[in-house]
Image (cartoon, rainbow, N blue to C red):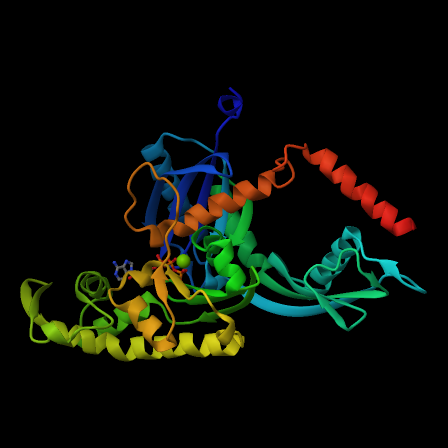
Length: 413
Ligand SMILES: Nc1ncnc2c1ncn2[C@@H]1O[C@H](COP(=O)(O)OP(=O)(O)OP(=O)(O)O)[C@@H](O)[C@H]1O
Ligand SMILES: [Mg+2]
């Protein structure tokens, strides 16, 4: 049978977060037949202030994460699909224009668009930057006509407005070096939250307008989609560790203990009923009682500020009134009970926890945590096969050839 003959392939996504390194393996037969066969998470070491601070330690950490994943799944591989968190990236919007012809008009071809986007990439970055994602927002034909797809239109000059997601060159070089030292090769690099959006958001949601919020440990990324593309990205320097830090400071506990308490007892909204309840917390050799109300009071102001910053980001996008499909929330910080409800109330929008609609061998209960590795592995797969699979059964070169002929035809006549 044909389907049996297609060899399944494995893709490893690895998400380098500021607090956790997460890795997962996706088994892919074809774009409609994928399975998450294992995932693993490990605390990040040797990585500080959004850059590699200790190469040996960081690379050991990557090695350990992938080694454990290999042990769990029995699958070996060499290439990884790397994802980087919001803390490590920058965005830039740029406008670029090219002339199409000296005199008269011509019909705009796929090649013109390719050249324009290539120029945009060259002009849009500084000397020591790399582009992770280049997202054309709209094209302009002869300064007036805004088009999402200008192929086939008459024009004398062609412009593009692009949103670039970029990273510092040495930062990515050092991270890649750590991956090499761990014994692996980097196949592709993506912005983690963007890769996540590919598996938690439906195309119809993105078309009608929706928001993805990735709550990490030190940063939260707000991504606004409309007409099917990423239109706006804002980073907020508040995440789950800010909640923990407040608990640690106000109840006078070490950070790690405050982290445990946060995960077991903290809530972001709907608290009142249990105000006088106490929990016993082990400190050194003694148990001390802590009121649940005190935990709530410790995180409440930072939650308030956090929600306000998200609201401000969405207003800044200028697209709030065009969001018809609500908000989806991912990242470890979203697991704080009451957090997503609180954000939904503040924005007066429907809100849900991100889900990956994918069969997984083990029931991984926190898909909000592992959606990034699935998105990374899937993005890697799509990049590899973009030109080798076509939905209508034609081989890639035949399709490419037809396009080329069309381009030539339009260029000469
Ligand atoms: N069950 C839980 N309840 C509350 N908070 C949680 C829970 N599980 C994880 N978190 C919080 O999620 C945060 C980590 O999220 P995540 O693993 O997405 O971050 P990261 O990817 O390492 O960071 P970043 O994306 O900022 O680089 C931590 O602050 C952690 O305390
Ligand atoms: Mg993250």
